[in-house]
Amino acid sequence: MTHVTIIAEAGVNHNGSIELARQLVDKAVEAGADIIKFQTFKSEKLVSKSARQAEYQKKNIGKKSDDSQLSMLKKLELSEQDHKDLMTYCKQKGIKFFSTAFDMDSIEYLHSLNLGLWKIPSGEVTNYPFLKRIASYNERTILSTGMCDLQDVRAAVDALYKNGLSKDKLTLLHCNTEYPTPFEDVNLKAMDALRKEFGVEVGYSDHTKGIEVPIAAVALGASVIEKHFTLDRNMEGPDHKASLEPDELKAMVSAIRNIEKAVDGDGTKHVSESERKNITIARKSIVAAKDIKKGELLTEENLTVKRPGTGISPMRWEEVIGKTAVRDFNEDELIEV
Image 1 (spheres, rainbow, N blue to C red):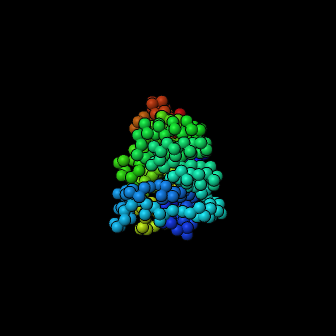
Image 2 (image 1 turned 90 degrees about the horizontal axis):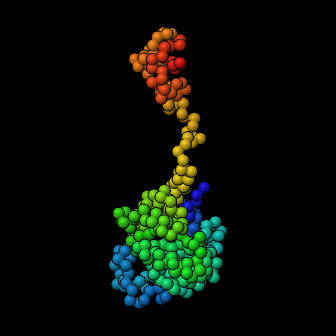
Image 3 (image 1 turned 90 degrees about the vertical axis):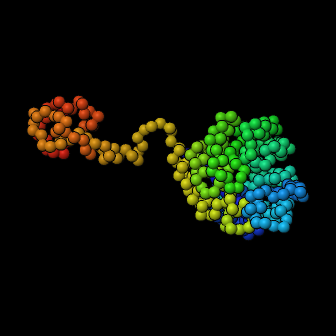
C-alpha cells in the first residue's frame, strides 16, 4: 500500500530552546508523523546585516525596534550539540530526525551527521552552489518549488542532475511561499504539471491555514506532505501563526492515513468484498403487487418492485410482463417464471 511520507516541520518553532524542541518531537510522535524537520543555519552565513524581515515575519512577531532578519534568526539557531541531542532524542522516540540547511557550512555539518536525506527550501532553488553541493552526495533529495515557474524548476533540476543526483532520488514539492497561503493561490493541480514534466515523485509543502489542503493533495497523488506545526500558535516567532497545533497535526496525519487507503485501489470498477453482502439487501426483485392466481397474466398492474434482491431482477421486467403465473402468488411474494 502507498505510504505518504509526512514531515512535521518544527522549523524554528522551538524559539531557540532545546526543551521546546524536545516537546515538539514528542508531539510529532504522538501525531504519527514519519519525520520531524528542523532548520540548520548560521545567521551570519544566511543573511546580510541589511536584510529586512518579510512582511509576514513582521506581522507574526509584532512591531520591534529592530526588524532585521539577522537579529531575529540569531535567537532561533540550534547549536551542533543541540542537533546531536535532538538526533538521540528522536531515535529514542522512534521518529526520524531531519533538518534543512540554509548555508554552505550547514550543508557540510548535516552531511557529517549522515542523515541520508536532503531538503532544498524554496529560497535556495536559484542558488547554484547550494544545489551543486547537495547533488554531489547523490542522496534522497526533496526540492520545494515555492516562488517558481516551470522554467525555474527545470533549471534547478538540471543543475541537480548535472552535478550527480540520480533522477530516482528526487522528489519535487509543489509549494506556495506565503504564510499563510491564500486558498485561491494554492493551485494543487500544479503537482500534475511537475509530475508530467519531470517524471519524478511529487508532493506538497503546505502553508495554508488548516488541514484540508494537504489532505486534498494526498488524494491528488502527493507522496510527501510537509506541514509546519507548533506547540502554541500564540507563541512569539515568525512561523507560529501559520503552523498547526498538536491536535490539528494529529488530525491531519489521521486523515491522510485514511485517504491513503481510499486512493490505493486498482482503479477498476468492481464490487468490493465489504459491500458484496449488501447486494441482496439493497437491491430489489419483482414481486406481486396484489394476490395473483395461477394462470393469470402478469402485468404492470399486478407486479411491482421491492426489496430484497433475492428474486428476479427488475432488469428483466420486459421479459416477465406478459407471461402467465406459474402458481398462486400472495401480495409481496417474489415472482417466479
